[in-house]
Image 1 (cartoon, one colour):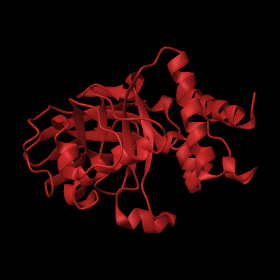
Image 2 (tube, rainbow, N blue to C red; image 1 turned 90 degrees about the horizontal axis):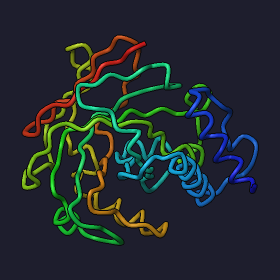
Image 3 (tube, one colour; image 1 turned 120 degrees about the vertical axis):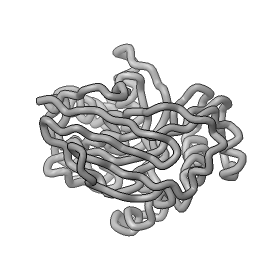
Image 4 (spheres, rainbow, N blue to C red; image 1 turned 135 degrees about the horizontal axis):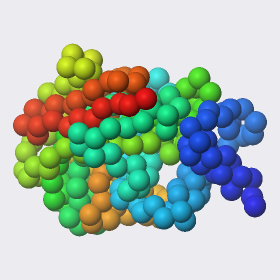
Length: 255
């Protein structure tokens, strides 16, 4: 077993057991390429256990977040069917380490996407769009990590909730978004916070997966990225994201 295999198993075990681990980058020097290899191997372990790849998520899609992390590009992670939470469903807090939520927009693809494309070309491959919520959860102690750590940890992706699908002809460039916790506004934002237009995030997703020998497949869901700051979850919470023209998506938090 290689060092990267060992690190992938460490992150996978941390996610499965909901136990925080030390930052990988504190013990060794990791390149960004190493980090994506660890991520791929970690997801490979999940697929070997019977999970199925159903899409990908984008991270660091706001300029402020890029500046905060000292990076010039976004990051991405892989989604599996086991990460999908039913709209209106309930999650168990015991399955997470440091769970937080972000309001997002999701795309459902009707055709593959690969390599550099324009936002217009990317949208031509979209079958439907929906309001969504991503549940992020860093597996590292104290929710502290380097860029390489977070990429290795599947870009902190743990779960996602998708609301009702709408036709793709709705202009999503500047839609109001309201994240509510227990019926009260927790974050108010706009889809414009996602790279100025979430379609740009979809185009970037096509480019970035191609750089790692993959493509976005028909039938996959692509999470465009958070539109606001993330909100920490606690037991008993009711979470809802309402997106102008697209409707709402929600879930509740159990113990």
